[in-house]
Length: 171
Image 1: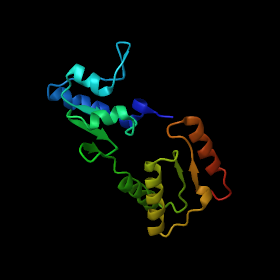
Image 2: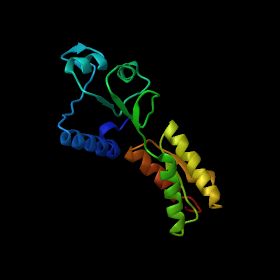
Image 3: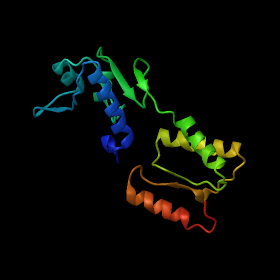
């Protein structure tokens, strides 16, 4: 399940792109493979529209459609995924999560739980950093303090939160 552009991070990023593009005299358009009831590739659509560049956001970067753009001669940037030949805007998951754990610790908390999303590379990186930051602070993290739910899915997140808050020793 993907939250796509409805996710506040992607919406804010897209709004920043839009503002900067407008400031520089450019316009933003969306492209897709269903163009005028004809099935076409992103690359074909971008060439038809004569775009100056492409920002790939909220896409499957392993999909041949996206890769067609990435490996074309059209300037392309990606969000939260790096290709060898393109500029990427990357989140700092490592330092962000480490800073969060240290902040919570600085506020006096010693039993810290972590509710994370599904199994992705981002999730695995964040889990690694969470455990590492807790270890540096000499915090013990019981396995029941680590819960999984679906990113940005309120019912799943609520259930995980409720589960962790009903533990005999609450975080």
